[in-house]
Length: 251
Ligand SMILES: Nc1ncnc2c1ncn2[C@@H]1O[C@H](COP(=O)(O)OP(=O)(O)OP(=O)(O)O)[C@@H](O)[C@H]1O
Ligand SMILES: [Mg+2]
Image 1 (cartoon, helix red, strand yellow):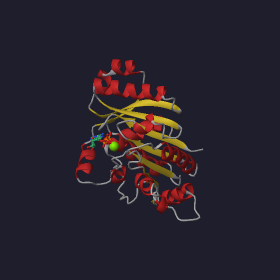
Image 2 (tube, helix red, strand yellow):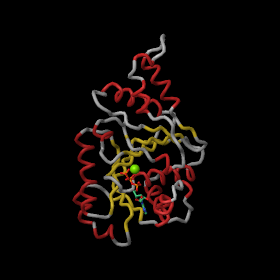
Image 3 (cartoon, rainbow, N blue to C red):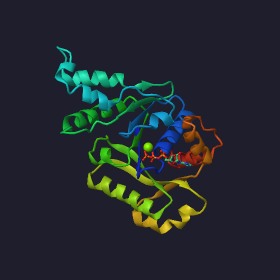
Image 4 (cartoon, rainbow, N blue to C red):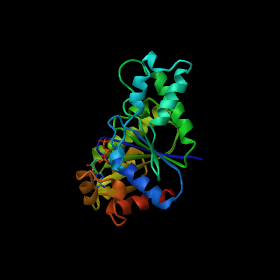
């Protein structure tokens, strides 16, 4: 069974950082397990946090294949798209990465969205873990592009407004009937005592607080220097906090 874990939340609340920390954790603690990471943010940057460069995104493939001449004779469009998609996969020793890019664009994209969903469903079956980094706008969630999710981590900064926004993510999930088995809140970049002070807001949001990734100057430094977060040292605050969180979630 594939464990599908997605990260969602307001812009700049640490989604990509949390996704990268999760990949780091799974590589270290679940040695030998197959991990698929999906960057579902149109403005993709999970690859940078993971230290990879990406040439093709699903978005550009779908764009290319809109041209009828792009499909070789004797091949159906679906088969051709699947073939191109399989080539867009970045394969590393410890994990694979697929980047959605921007499959939206103008016009009706119901067809590619559906195809993409089926592709992700099929693909995910080959892995033990699937880690999905979402964009802030919730496009992928609200279009129900994502397959069923076992665990949805909703990130927030340590502010009342942030927590309310996280609560709205939960509302969207319920409204569009996304299949989410477990959903919870992760507070990011917090300082000592801040999560405690937000106790009442958290209760009002209807989300359970799963944990916090406190402010770690090393994360900021790595991002500043475009260093992959996968190479954060074991004793980094963010690595320690995330380990505690993922262990508590029995990951
Ligand atoms: N625990 C942390 N300690 C210090 N800085 C952090 C921490 N988590 C995230 N940051 C910083 O906050 C910024 C936003 O983080 P990140 O890119 O992970 O957020 P995001 O939710 O993915 O943003 P976007 O909505 O743009 O995709 C980055 O500059 C990152 O370095
Ligand atoms: Mg991000």
